[in-house]
Length: 242
Image 1 (cartoon, rainbow, N blue to C red):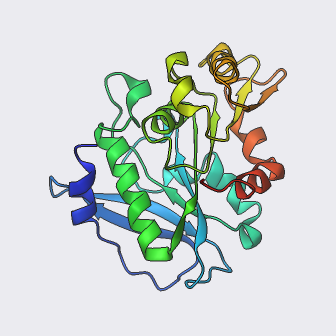
Image 2 (spheres, one colour; image 1 turned 120 degrees about the vertical axis):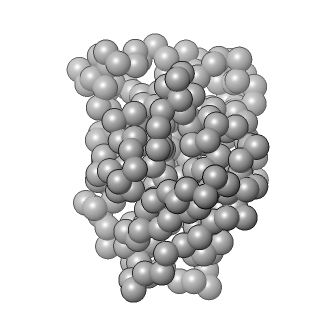
């Protein structure tokens, strides 16, 4: 978390003519470098009403500096299929580069993890995001980040949805009280489904009640199935931070 405070102090937003839909934003980091990211604002957004909010963490393939690639895969694609009625404020950070230990790229205390949290705070402030209905989800590299950010900040998230990721089973005691719906492909050759299965079993052993969907015959791309599940969004909304 060492960079987060500096990011928040230096956060800046680029004015946009449109106030709903996919909007481009920039943030200046403590090193003076500006980072591009995207937020999605519901088309029926009411500034006077706290808005449920999602932080989406992309996978390794979307790393870069273009600022938009992370919206083309995963949750962004699913939003476009239901854009007019999608009720969430969504923050799409883009990792500028991967950590040497790739799976730790979105971890708190790392540059990309702290930047993502700062972007979430900036969007929450600008568009009246609801801190009691803030959800966390990610795919592959972002799935690992989802597990870790949940473990590091268990009181921040109303619910989490890690997809084709994994974590340390020793984290289960910290995460057990966060509503969790996890997804994985049965024949994932990049991140074995055993990584999710072990986390789910550890949560259950710790007293948690996670949901788990494993897609038979599906490989690494389990996110299209997961984010294509309308029930996921209803489930998010059914959970409020206690």
